[in-house]
View 1 (spheres, rainbow, N blue to C red):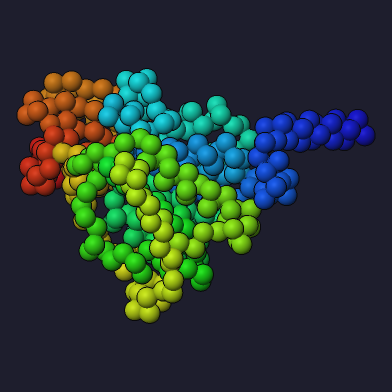
View 2 (spheres, rainbow, N blue to C red; view 1 turned 90 degrees about the vertical axis):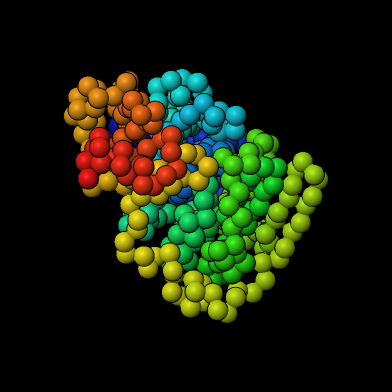
Length: 354
């Protein structure tokens, strides 16, 4: 009896703590107490923990979404600090992967939320596992190849996809819901991207915050079942030149290979090229053959490299040729300092093996 009373008292304290934490959000009538409870039972996936992803994760965790899973393949660099709000100079010095650095910050913000940080490249081979148990996907990516993969996987599984993009002073956002709206392929074909990225023409931080906030508010509407409030349009804007345009999503393209013909092109690729140039970053990613022991590779590379740095998540090796290798436990290797695939493969073969 005493244990039961103690448990009830603890539950009451927990409830009071939650009410205090989310009091201002629950005072907002469209969310209220019932909406807050719904948020606590929902799960979101954020793909990319860079500029958009860090803002999205910050909003979702502070709002009290029950489970926030995010995945990113990269690590924190000094150039990220201008716009990627969860990172600081210590993360750069420690060489933390973005997912790990974000996890450390977010756990200190809200211990009520179940946070799942994954250091990995998102591919056709792991996308289904990443989507398992997820109610909504938030787009924090920086390339259209991954966006179309997400689009196709979400529409095949019937999971809403909150699309967002930011570059220069321009941004765009829409929430795409299977069975209710067109998919991304309906208004943007896989060959239409301009090739402009933050790494080639830059980006200002305010536009990132605005895009992610548009995504986050549509996410909250969906997660609390406020369907009547959802925006059924693609918003595009330029905050520097004061342009704003809203386009109704309209009807799906009847010939869309994803949401209409159910072909899901991005999911039909059985073998993905293991060598990819990361646009504008003078970096080539090579997927490798399998898991790597960072400790063992530290010993192997130390005699040949100019400098080797190791932490629990990755290994960096400065090479005599001027390039740098970054090794991850999942087998991925970044060759930094070149965009030439042939040279990157040659360096990889020389130091890691063919």
